[in-house]
Structure formats: structure tokens, C-alpha cells
Image 1 (cartoon, helix red, strand yellow):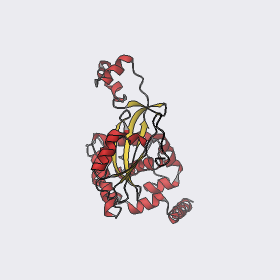
Image 2: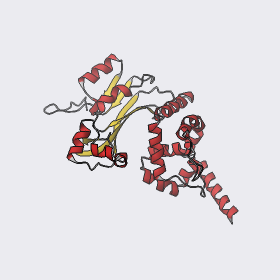
Image 3: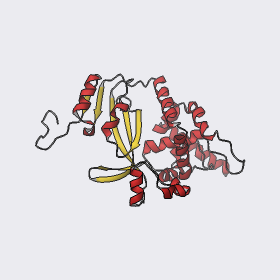
Image 4: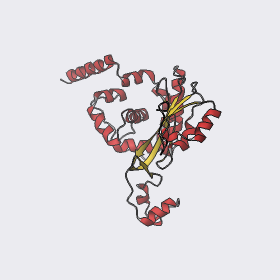
Length: 280
């Protein structure tokens, strides 16, 4: 009976592979093993004892973070999808009988990457792999920013004043456990009349392949245009730059011209100055 179940599972896996889905193509294209030396630094700290479950393979955890980006899902939703979708399990190399990392494990792994400053190394390794396989950016770049919401903070007026001054409230310092779940870096922003609390992810994508080539993460109140300089990819052979009207200003247009970039940044109508037919 057990052999029959294994056989049926293999048939379903083969059917998935025959479809050549995006996840299957990623597994064929990305040399995941090359990320291992960087990822294993997360578990370099010696364990106090051998009790408890062994750490989950770092490459599995890294690929889980990739799934989140591809499908724009939360830690909790990823937890559910991994238990529900055979294609996700196949992508991670997990069988039906193997334990699936939960939302808390994913969150802790992401925090460890950030604390040990490994995210930049991983991003650079991925970009090198793309270039090595011939995905040379040459079609110009699209820049954009997205708000990443986080749970809102229930702070008092005095605590908000301290945080605005770049200080940690005394009551938090006296209770370290309280400080551990407070987000002191996130901030508020307003877009299209809607307020959001969190961070901003600023990205630059090459036009030809659609791969993310540059990125920056800031608190949400940072204006999109302030990060444009960090997103301009000098290794992209294309000279054209696309962006929405949030990046439009006379100074930015002047700088792009000096740097010999061709601007396709959207123009925006102002009061008593509507866009012309050509601008539209």
C-alpha cells in the first residue's frame, strides 16, 4: 500500500515536470548550491546541545523566501500554501512525509539573514549567476517603490515623541522583552489618501529579462525619488529609464541628462497646467 502511494506521488511529480512550470525552470536554471557557503553562516553559531529538531537546510529556507517574493504572500500564507500545493513542495525538494517549516521559522530565518548582513551577499551572488548564464541587462531599467506594511505600533504620545527624536523610550529599555517586539524603524506614509505603516522596497528591473538588478529598503516615509540614484544600474547597457510620476522633477531630469540616461519618467499635470496630447 505504501509503495503504491509513493508510485502515485512520483507520477504526479513527473506530470508537474512535463508542464515546465516557472518553479521547475528556476530549479533547472539557478545553481542553488552556490548559495550554500553564504547561507550556512546562519547556523555557524554553536548549539548549546543536540536536543530538539535539527535546523532545516538553509537552501530550503532561502527558496521559501523566494516563493514569497514570486507570489507576494505573507509568512502565514506561505505556511498554508506549502502544505497545500504540490508544486511548492516539489520546488523545495520536500516529500509528503517531511515536516514543512512554519511561519515563525521563516520569520526567524529572515531576521538572521538581516542581522548577519547576508542579504546583500546573496543578492550579489544571484546577480553574478544571472550574468554568468547570459542574462546581461541591456534593455534599460524600470524603477519603482512598494510599501511593505507591518503591524501598527500601539505607542503612547510620549513614546512616539521619543522615537521621532531617534531615542528608545525608558520604559522599553527597562523591559527588554517589550522592546523585542517593537518595530523602531518603520514609519508612516500616505499614498492616494491611504495611510500605511511599514517600510518601502525600492527596486530596479531590467527591461529585457524582468530581473531585479538593484534594490534598497527604507522606512515608508522616504520619498521614492530620494532613492533613484542608488537604483540606476551602470552595468545595464540600455540608457533608457522608466518610472512613474513620483520620480519626476526638474533636478532629476537634469541629472539623468548629465549621466546620459534617456528619461521616460511619467509627467504629471499640475493645477492650471494640464498635460498636452504629446505628454499624455
